[in-house]
Structure formats: C-alpha cells, structure tokens
Image 1: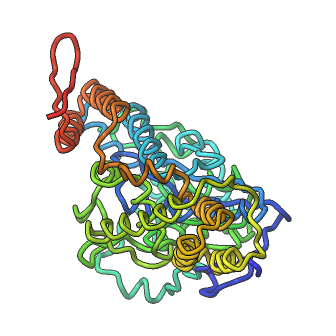
Image 2 (image 1 turned 30 degrees about the horizontal axis):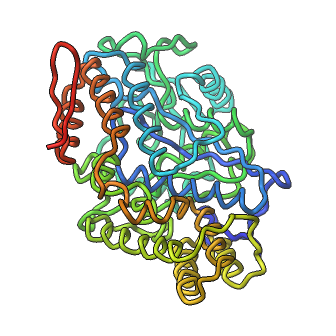
Length: 461
C-alpha cells in the first residue's frame, strides 16, 4: 500500500511521492524559544517525530529541518524582564527544550537552524520581493508585504481577500498601504537592545516572524521541498504568509504537501500560554513516566484534537502496562527485521500508510499482545516489540518497567542531581521562579533540598 498523506493545501489524502526518489525533505516550524515547552508543543513535535520515523521505516532518507525562532517581541520582553541577554535566554530555553523532548523520545531533526543565523538570507529575500513589486518600505521604516499583489493569497487557509477585509475592525494603519499587508522587516525601536538590531539597506531593524521560515526552509532544503508541517494554528496567517513570500520570490511551489497537527485541549479550549491553561512538559513528567506521555499522545491521530487530563494519562499508563505485561510473559526475543507479510505487521503498516494512523496501529499492538498472552510465542513477542519500536514504544525492559513505571517509583539519584543542576543554572541566570518551581517539583516527589555555603544537598522525606 502506498503512503497517503492528508494535504491541507488540496484538502484531501494524496499518494506521497518525494521530489527526489528515495529522499524526503521536510520542514517544520519549531519553537519561539522564550519559555519552557508545554504539552501542546510536545504534541506538535511528536507528530512530526512519528512522520520522520515512519518515512525512515518506509526506506526513505529524510532531511528533517525544524527551526528555532530566537528573535521575537516575546523573547525581547522576557530577556529584559529577567535582566539577561537575548542569547542567554534562548540558549537556556533551547537546552531545556532539548532535555524535555529528549525525555519523550523525540528524535532530533537533521538540521536545527536558528533564525538569527539567517538574517542575510532574509534580507536577500526581502530585496527580491521589493524588486518584484511585492514589498514596500513604509514611512515608519518597516518593510511590508503587499498581499493584494500576490494572486494566490488564501489558497492554503481557504480565506479569500474579501472575507479577510470583511473581518476588519480597525482603520488602516498609517504604516501600511492595506490592512492585510504584513511586516517583513521591523524598524529598530530606541528602547530595544542592540543585539536585537541588524544593519540593512532599510535601516537598523530585525526580521518579521514570517520571513524567517521562508528564508530558513529555502536555504536548507531548496526552493521547493516535499513536506511543510506545523500546528494547525500556524495555517493562517503564518503558513499562508510563507507561501506568499516564498512563491512570490521564486515563482515555484514552496512545498508539495502541507501537514498540520491538531490542538491539545483542556476543558474544550486550546492549550496555550496566552490562555494560561497550559502544562509544561516538566510538570507532566513529574507525575508520569515519559513513555506513558508519549503513548498518550500517540493514541490519538495527529490531526485530531487531543484532550488533556490526568484521567486520560492514567488510562494511557494502564494500557501501556498491559502491553508490557504481555512482553513480560515471554522470554526476550532478539528484535530483527520486521516481516511485513505477517498479518499483524501488514495491518500495522496499512494503518501507518493511511496518513500515519497511529490509533489503528496501536490497536494492532493490543491485538498482537492478546496473541502473545494466549500463545506465549517468542516470535510474536519479538514482533510486538519491533512494531512498537517504530513508534518509539516498548523498548524498555518489561520487568523493570512494570516494577516502577517511571515516575511512579520516584525519581532516581541521576534524575535528582540533574534537576539540582538545572536549579543551579536557573539561580545563576536570576530565574528564581524556575528555581522555585524545580524545588517544588522535587518536594512533590519527596525530595527535600538543603542549601548551604558548601552547595546543595538532598534527602528523601
């Protein structure tokens, strides 16, 4: 069965064929790195971790680019609040992100570009757009994109220009020819730090958010690549604007497939920092082991909404234990190449080839676990473990997992020392709120910290 992927651009499932036979080039919009990642961010990165893994299982070489936005209004504001440099903040939060998503088994991308490393490419792209009449510099120094001059605007989101104009509630800003226009280059403000300013033909300033991804994706993957992904909230305006910028400059399609994951919801509202209803990955991992969290996310299809609650996580933990229980009843078998003609493996592959259908694939794992429980067949046990491995599951020692289940058994000494080290770094960076949060996280796990001139010691309560 050919891999089919739902393409947001065409609004249908399409057979997937990469531009270059055997090689998939994929770009995913990553994090604006000013705070700790929450479960919604984990869901996005998990979705494309599964895509990357399955493409590799299917025999493709994958060049996966996931960027870091390290210059932004929120980053500047947070760094000023904390009295540290932008680089210190973004380095700290990038390290935290790597640690958190690494715990969830999310594999790193092939390339992880930082926006600040691609400002020359952004300026070159803006210059091309200006030469083509698609960009103009306003009186306030900003450079804006002229949306109405790009005929295809709205094709990804399905929004027409008339619909967008009908939704306007404010007068045209004096720095824009049209309220639909968006900024490509922001003129520097007097109160902004010098590290947030770059010299350009348009005067000192910094790039707008949308131009960053156009420059980074084209620089790393070429003017047209196979898959562009991100959260559903980025479909408009971010991805729509990326198309306008990139295709306006090159005259070529930016990506053949546009793939968007669904939201994480809490009480029927999208989980987000702006709504204040988010749970950081670290908060969740203080209560649940990483594989349970991974399994919880993978039980839902990547395009569907994911309802977050402790009840759902508890259910995921119990279900994952049932799979490990089946593995614990049979002597460990060496995990070899998967025989895709085996009926369970074939059903699993068919599920994954239907737009990365992890819920159906997980159902196959439970059917296979039932067969293992009945037959105690070593080969079937090995297949269960191998199929789970394609999703980043069932690779722990079954006996050890069932004894502890990760967070249920409490933090190990290595985990405690790692958190103490994170707390020391937070205090050094004057991020006392984060230091207090780590102390409380340890206390919730029965670990009491004692600070002294000689350093920090700990004991279990």
